[in-house]
Image 1 (cartoon, rainbow, N blue to C red):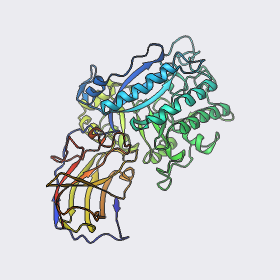
Image 2 (cartoon, rainbow, N blue to C red):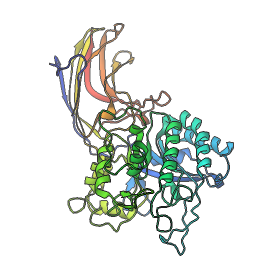
Image 3 (cartoon, one colour):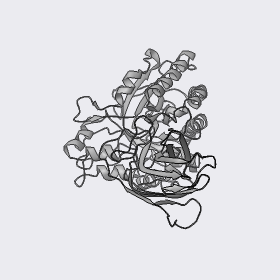
Image 4 (cartoon, helix red, strand yellow):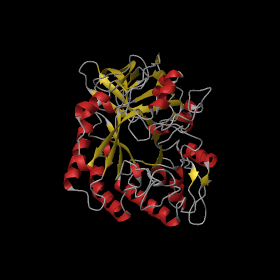
Length: 492
């Protein structure tokens, strides 16, 4: 439970004259940085720019391929395949087009999950795993130079980057089948050597330095975070992020997870393997690594996709399966809407798809509010908002939380900031109790009261598409992105 007090260490004795009760909505809300995402692949060799109208359409309910469900989303996952640059710098033309794609996403009112890789297709043959080398990724020197080239574009477009995935290494950028960073498959060494871990963590460090500190990077397996933080020989029992360390913009606090085989097998296709090192073999470490990720993910960004429907009934709806349990336990914020549709369809037939849609990421339900209905300009207004976050996670990026006062006579707006960190509005009760100071120059009159949770970036902070909507009936203002509190304050 989050209880924030503005001017006292103890809970406020409210002098509120207005008490309001609100009704909960059951609609799947297209809120920023959460929910099902749409995937797009962009190839350097035949670049097809993002299209504004297509991206805008994704914000409305869209039928997903031949699946049994539809989805409306604010998130677009874009996999940029640098297939033309495996041995050379990224061209100026590509960088310009990437910058234009970011502008297109901004204009369309969506955010991007970005991953770069060099190859997105495997080829088979007579080898141990049936996916055979050469795999087609790029050497470390090329990768590091590409990250250096991308840095200014990542920095200037951070407003519409929800998060970034590590990528770069291996087929699909999943850090597994790699020609240069270790091959843990049956065809290769069957484990990851110390030198390979050092190379991988060097790439991750470069990415953390390239992306602004306000954003997180997702890694494909939790062990990579452990070995980045604690060294190449770190054990699977290594400590997870603590609440005191969370959201501190340190490297440790900025590494989250993408599981691209969620609910797809006992180890999720090796997601929870210990990949060993030069002195130790690869082995299953599912219990320890799941425990680590469950604890760590409370404070970091988590998403991914399903990949195989064979893991039934475990991947089905509860109580027979554990789909909702795993979404909640690993604090999922987003999932691929288009893959694997066989797994996702099971949630439709099992009756839990609507719940998953609604609860992925955060979902704030305002229960009651107590707001002083009279105040003096330059004085204090007391506000107590009692909410529940019924979603699987809290927001993973910072944003302001504001009390908005709108003068009923002339429509002028006054913005007063709450002292709170919305990233700490974890699943459960969120009680925002504060005394807020009114401006001394505030004009006397009657003011309507709103709650506003806009994006932190000035470039999009006034865009309703990037503001958070409460899961309540009749409160959302589509033209402003404000949530009405159905209260007024008389300012004298």
